Length: 120
Image (cartoon, rainbow, N blue to C red; front, side, top):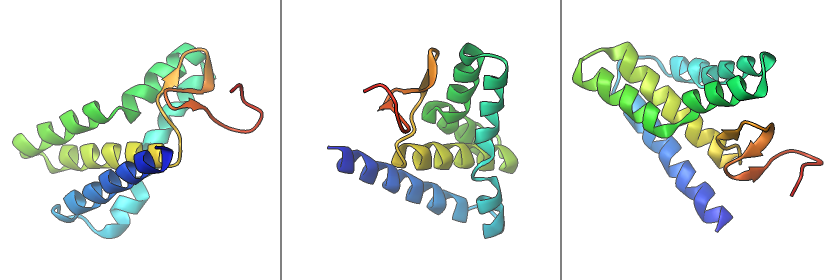
């Protein structure tokens, strides 16, 4: 099952690339922005609760889709791009086993515990 779920995430990442191709940006722009949603992890410097909330905001696929659709329907290219980047990044993270965070610990995700020496 785990392999099937990761394959689904690969498909969603490929969909993001197809959507990005419809925009008028250079390829390097996609690659340069792909990791920017991880800036949200800086909120963990304040506390785990704010960190989890901020991280989940920037890694939730429904929010990514809403941002994309808002940009698309309002004809705001940078907003459309932002939605695609958020969606691509979330798909890439889930493909690698990183999920949305619980408030108790950064390593506790909706996909289970991550990292070495974690609680199983």
